[in-house]
Length: 335
Image 1 (cartoon, helix red, strand yellow):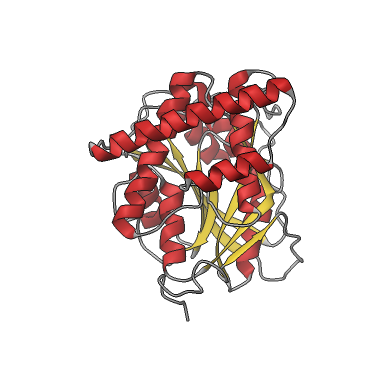
Image 2: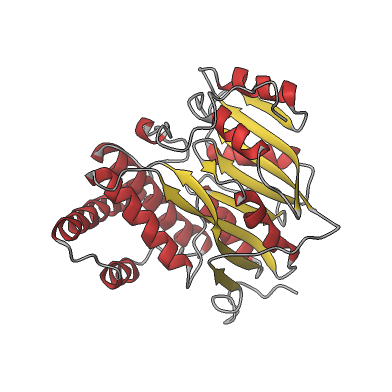
């Protein structure tokens, strides 16, 4: 029986953090529904679907892949339809007006058939066994949610690339001892929808799973590739939105994500500080930007600014440096 969120065991025994999961073959595959939330993602949606349909699966079965196209004005819907003609598991659901990612997730949850689901943005690329690694731990009844390890494609020899690599490396280190969901998650459907407007969807799902006392697990071997912002303005826009969302969650539902504590994050940076001159100076600069982004987020939250439908950071949308997987449209041999 799940323990209440206020129970003293809540913050300890229900966290299972590990860097890898080696599934054993089973005669009863875990069937799951995957939801991909997309808004004007023509640059990557085809490559993502190709990567998903090419996954190496052993104990997991992808029963359906539902793409929720929200207010798209580009070729996203046409690309998804071309894949749906090749593989009946791919389904397109259209939201005529963009209503935010949480609305798209709720739309997906209302249409998904399986009890175990997987949610992803459309601006990611999973490695060949990422879905197997991510979903397989749910064979353990003590685990109700898993999260992946995002590895940016950004060039660390450029400042903004260094910033992206640093933030996600710290995210990984934090997840080795605590739990912070991000980018792609899998979970049991213990709820029907995310019940409030929020710009931090994975954190909201995390709070609902853990708030019911269910177990979570970080799977560091479930690697997906993303792209960080290329400009300071995009970086600040992203960081202020996330921090404002985390503050709202803390005050609305009493749940605090692992990254909300400034003291904890400063300590994490100091423990993993690279003392080489350029890395040291750039780390200080990224920390200053993060602090300013958090200041802006606190200001937004105080003014009740709604970030649930946010301005897209265009520089995070093209994963051009990721491994090539075709032009995004299905080939004759695609399944």
